[in-house]
Amino acid sequence: MASGPQFNLDHEVVYGTVEHVSPLVDRVTCENPSRFTFKGTGTYIVGTDDVMVIDPGPPEDGHVDALVAALDGRTVTHFLITHTHGDHSPAAATLKEHFDAPTVGFGPHPLDRPDPNASSDDEEAGFGFDEDDDEEPEEQVESENEGYKSDHAHDWDFVPDMVVAHGDVIQGAGFSVEALHTPGHISNHLCFSLADKHAQYDRSLFSGDHVMGWSTTIIPPPDGSLNAYLDSLRLLVPRDEAVYYPTHGAPITAPQALVPALLGHREARTEQILACLGDGIDTIKEMVLRMYTHVDKKLYNAAGASVMSHLLALHEIERITCSDDQPKPRSIYGLAV
Ligand SMILES: [Zn+2]
Image 1: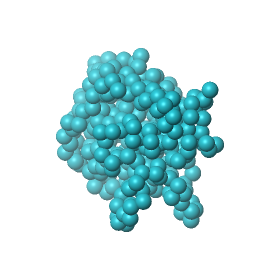
Image 2 (image 1 turned 30 degrees about the horizontal axis):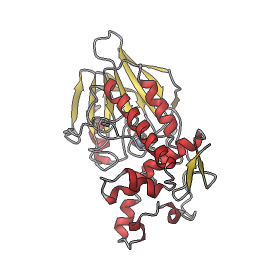
Image 3 (image 1 turned 90 degrees about the vertical axis):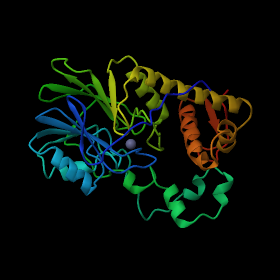
Image 4 (image 1 turned 45 degrees about the horizontal axis):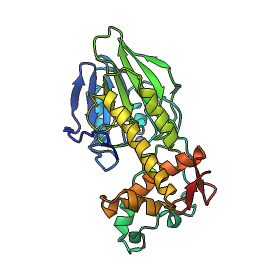
C-alpha cells in the first residue's frame, strides 16, 4: 500500500480553559478523551463580541460551565452543529438555557432511537475471529461495545431551530459561515466554511468529524456511507480553505495534502479488497487476516468494521456479490461479473 495520510498526534490541550487558536477563533476542550474523541471534544467560539459556537459538546457539567464562563460578556448569535453524535450536539440544549440563540444544523439524528426492549443481534455481529469465542469479563465486553453502538454515542433529541442545506450562508458580525453538506460519517454531517468580510484572516473550515488530522474517520453502519464519505472528500479537493479545525485534534494546516491522501488511502484499501476477491478470499475474516498482517489481534474487529464499510460501498455500486441481501459480518463475497 502507498504511504498513507500523515497524521498529527501532537495536540496539547488544557481542559476547561479558553485557547486562542486564531484571531477570530477560540476553543474550549471538554475532558472526554477516548479512542473515538482523541483528546476530547473541541468546542469552537467564532467571532469577538458577537459569536457563533460550533459543536457545544457532550452534556458534561464541567464543560458547560467552562463554556458559560468563556462566553460571559459576549452575545451568542448561533449554535452551529456539525452532526448529532453524542460528543457534539447535546450540550446545546443546556447552553440555550443561558444564551438566547438558535441551533443550526442539517437535521435531527437520521436513525430512530433503538427500542431498549428489542433483542440484540450482537451474537451475529462478530466477524468470527477466534477471540470472539473467548470468555471475556463483563467490563471488557461493555467497553468493546462502546463507541457508535452505545446509546450515549447519539443525540436522539436534537432538532435544529434553523435547518440549513448545502451552500446556505449564516451571517455573523463581521464574518459569515457557509454550510457544506458532507455526509459519510453520518448523513446529517455539515462542515462550516468561515470567511471574514475583510478577508483579513485565512479562510478556514470547521470540519467536524469529516476530516480529522489525528485519525481516519469511522463510517459506522447503518447510516454511515463510504461512497457518500468519498464524495464529501472530493467536494473539498478544489476548495481553498487554508486551515481546517476538526472537532477532535489539532488544526490541520495542510488540508490540500491531507484530503487527497485520505481519498487515496480508501481507494487503495478498495483495490486490496477487490484483489482478495479476485484471489477467492471471500469472507471479511480472511480479508482482515491477509490485509492487516502487522496489526495487533485486538484491532481485528475494528479492521473488520472498516473492511465491511468498503464491502457495503462496493455492494451499493454492484461491483461485488454477497450471499445475503445486504452485506453482513459473516456473508460470503465475490466479484460481480
Ligand atoms: Zn461523530
